[in-house]
Length: 358
Image 1 (cartoon, rainbow, N blue to C red):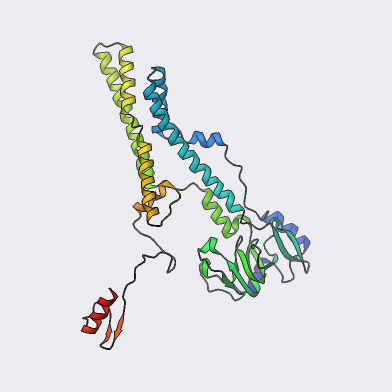
Image 2: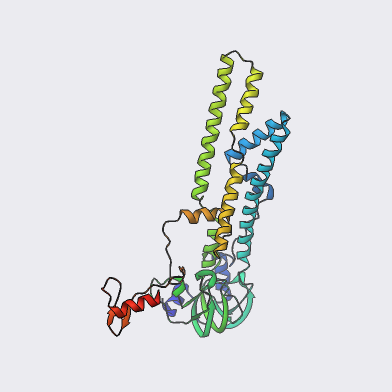
C-alpha cells in the first residue's frame, strides 16, 4: 500500500497521534511487548522426562531390583535413568533460555511523534498508528511502514538470514513481496545500522514478525521420525513384556508353582526384557553423527536434528546462495570453435577447455 493509504487505514497522521487516541489504542491493542510466560518450574520439567513408557518401566524395574537387593542391576539401571533424564532435562531448559533470549531483541525506548512533537517513550507504549523516528544504532520498536528515509539501512538478519544490511525507502514494494524484499518495511527488533527515517507503526507485540517467531519457538515442535519410531517401539515393548509376564505367571500357577516363586520369576523376566541400554545407545549414535558432521564443518546444536536431517528428502530454499554444494558446474562454453552447452556435440577446442577445467 502507499503511505497515504496506510495512514488512512490506520487513522493516523504524519504529525502523529493525539494523547486521547493513544490512550484509546493502548486499551484496544495492549502493550507493545511479547507475552512473558512464567518459567516452567524445574520439577515439572524433570517429571516430564518420566512420561515415556520405557522410562516408567525402567523406574519400576529399578525399584524391584532394589527391593530384591540386586545392587549391581539396580546400580546399572539407575545410571542409565540418570543419564537419560538429565539429557532430556538439559535440552528442555536450554530451549526455554532461547525463548527468553529472543525477547532481549525488543527495543526499550522509542522516539515517537505525538501531538506534532518528537518525544522519547518506553517502547511498550507504542501503538499502531504512531509515527516513529529511527536512527543508526537503535532497534526498531515495532513493525513500521517507512514514511521517510534518508540513507536508511537496517540489519534484518534475524528474519531473513541476509548478513548485509538492506536499504529502506518509502517507495512501496510490489504486492505479495516476501519479507526479504519489503524495502518499505522495518520490523521489530531489527537493528538500524545507518541513516535515519520515519515510519508508521502497523503492528505491535505478538502481531509483529518477531512475535510470529516467538510463537513458533514456544509451540512444542513435532516429534522427529526417530522419536516417533522410538515411542512406538517403547509401547510395543511394554505391551509385550506385560502380556508375557502375565501369561508366565498364570501358566506357572496352573502348573503348580507357588505365588512367591512365580512372582520372583515374573520380576526377573521383566528386568531381563527391558532394553535399559537403548536410550544410551541412541544418544551415543546421535553423538557420533554430530561429531561426523562437525568434521565436515556442519555444527548441529540438538541431538534429534541429526536424525531429522538424515530423514529429509526435499529441501526448499528461498534464495540462491542459501545452500551451496561447493561445486562449480559448466553451463555454457564459448571458444573460437563456437558455442557449446551440455547435450550438444563438442568440438576439439571445447573438449580441451572442458578437460582443462576438470
